[in-house]
Image (cartoon, rainbow over all chains, first blue to last red; front, side):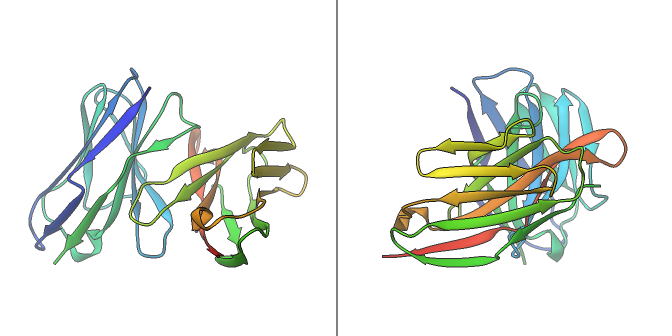
Amino acid sequence: SQTIHQWPATLVQPVGSPLSLECTVEGTSNPNLYWYRQAAGRGLQLLFYSVGIGQISSEVPQNLSASRPQDRQFILSSKKLLLSDSGFYLCAWSPHGREQYFGPGTRLTVT
Amino acid sequence: GENVEQHPSTLSVQEGDSAVIKCTYSDSASNYFPWYKQELGKGPQLIIDIRSNVGEKKDQRIAVTLNKTAKHFSLHITETQPEDSAVYFCAAWGVSGGSNYKLTFGKGTLLTVNP
């Protein structure tokens, strides 16, 4: 069966510091991978998605970037965090795009 | 692009009662509609989904109905239990910005089941 991992689970970072969140998937190959952000209002906002190694599509211009260095690894990064980057970051995988399965999430607080 | 509206934003029911959450979508080309359950501090969990060629789907106490003409779909939970308390999200799979497809989510419904 497939398993998706995210780390860290929680993170407190000062404004202006860098960020690196990692997501890995087990038990499947060549998955579609997604990064979402969930703000306090509960809505899910798609940030990035990837259909293959090195292929990244951005949905929203912002302070963040994503990379996919390996087939089942997806990384969300920032060079300098803003207060507005605080939120719950969710990684998801899909065999072909529609059915998406979410990881446990990373709670990021920027102070 | 696709727009998904979800109602109500909060719903409180007594244990054993039924709960219904409704969503509307704007893009008639959308063809896949999942529902997710999110418990506090956890990632959303896919609980049921329906494709556009089906009008209704059931899985034990939960069911989803789809009305393509009216462009709305609903989640029905029967015999609710306290462990059903969570935030529920609907979503629609459709075109976003040109030829790219993505899931567009509703804003969620906080369901509270009172013992």
